[in-house]
Image (tube, rainbow over all chains, first blue to last red; front, side):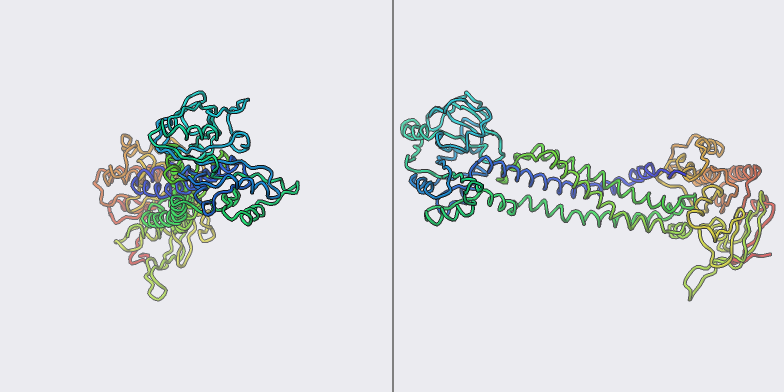
Length: 406
Length: 217
């Protein structure tokens, strides 16, 4: 004989206790949403970080001693960072064995609420188009000609489009191209050829409200590409050690280390979401388990009646277990939908507020996170439902009805 | 049909047992209408529960349709109840979350030869055709009892065990219920009815008297 259906009984029961059902649904939803959102934010942050550092295109970044952390923040979030090194340091770095090529960048200014760009913060960086190997490869449309001194490149988050003109410090530039998105501060960066930047600074005393002072003999960071190890090049850590030993005034950032460190340093929200996800699961198990244990106790008479009418133990087990499971699955789906909706609407804002780079994770990673959230909800339901279902199914019909009367 | 032999049921602890039924033996033939009579607490409900396999005896044996209930496991007992026994409980026994029709249809879930049209027809017969979509809390006590009777007859049981089916009901409802039960009996079902209503007991072919858990001859 086919197993008798239970879902209409479950639906009727859930409808009969709407407040209890909604509370349980929300408990599971919160657990699933926290796990899903936490994972998506973390994966998005790592993707953006990896993409930013890949975009950087350098094996090492040389900056003034003690300023590596500020540089990392500037790279990742576009936070203000203006510091300099003598340009002569580039030659010292180039002289170290195993260095294939170098390119310099000068961090000019962080502009707040610039009229041009509808971005709350944007970062002006001067670069050298002749030696550059880190910026142009990421142009979405490569111009087939060298950049003129007044032609600039912009990060993906900038509103203006190629061909638009932009004014900084009274100097007019033409946007020549936009770079691929990274989700990091690079998306809010304007790259100006060094020659154009120097001209802009010279003219700023007359044309701008505030003068921009920069020296042609200064750089902020030296981006270093090493010879491949297969061709006898040094490993990054060794080259970094070599540079810091020989040039005491610099610190060296290793992008691979930055990724590893950033993985470990969770932001407050991610820590909170992990905490909520971690504690909401046992809380959901406990809440579901206790509620259904009480429900079984309250419904002993009904259970006894169903057994007396011919219901088998397995039927009673399925009835209770599937009800917990149905609530858990519905709660999981609700949690994923809520978290997905919030992320869809506010992910960029969350990332900006919390100052970490962020991009939507790839579809398989998203699917995995959703699957994990749902699995967590289902496992909470399964675990919570097991004992009440077992105890309900083991009740002797007459005893259940007798105790249900008490 | 029913053979109870030396049937006893004790509740409480081993140190302080309470005997609800004490060495009761009797036989009910197929198609017979027997009434179990006795005062409240005399063991009528316990006896019917034992006969339906809703609880196991402390001592003695029950044979139903030639099968010793002690030899049946829980699954076989459930199958026996679902296919051959119609049970009318003493207390309100409708599931509060289900409509009248859904309550009356419950035994069909467990039956091997379900008749989906029968619950509606039986509800019509007990005068509740207009109330099939009502919930139990919208019914009077008499209406609830009539739904319980319809539910007990849904699977055309060979044995109907009715525990005070007309207790505390008005004479009109009492008569409706009695007529439905008698009709099922006339169609071949064995009817064992526990009551302390002398008028109802008087309609039975024979009486089984219980007093303080013992059979009174």
